Image (tube, rainbow, N blue to C red; front, side):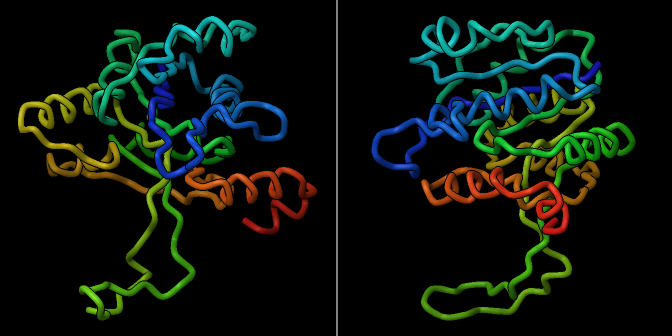
Length: 234
């Protein structure tokens, strides 16, 4: 059984203008609905738990999600102050028989089905996996106002989501992090600190995390491109 925790509980501080970015329209639909539909439509996914902003949980369930009629969609749950609090709330709503788990940022609305499948396959085989986007630019390590070193980009990758796990392994990793008071900026870091292997798969340019209004402009442009052009750009 494959479960998905879709995180939409962030405060959108960097997006600006007091707007909640997951509710901002992309091609005429709220951003979060694009992310949600990608997983509801995926043939390998069995259930999706949406984690909403705690103060907006009831409005989301009453208005945003009321027209979605899909047996895969579980009742939304309110998130918490930190990312791990929100994942923990989502995990509590996941079915007990879940075998594989994906955790995804709803601010990445255009995750391709291929990335979802690749992460699931690698997590099934290796225990944990994530998609990465390898840098095209030379990467510098900064030391205050000066450059400390030039890093070998062949060994670097920008982490994306969904990040995938055998569900039992993720439960173990989260429990250990909670016990030790460890907070991470992504989910595979919880598994890394246990000394367990994390595999990686190729990410996708369009699997961009919307952080600023300019990111939204890029995704609008991407959606408007012909399919052949999108495939050639990957």
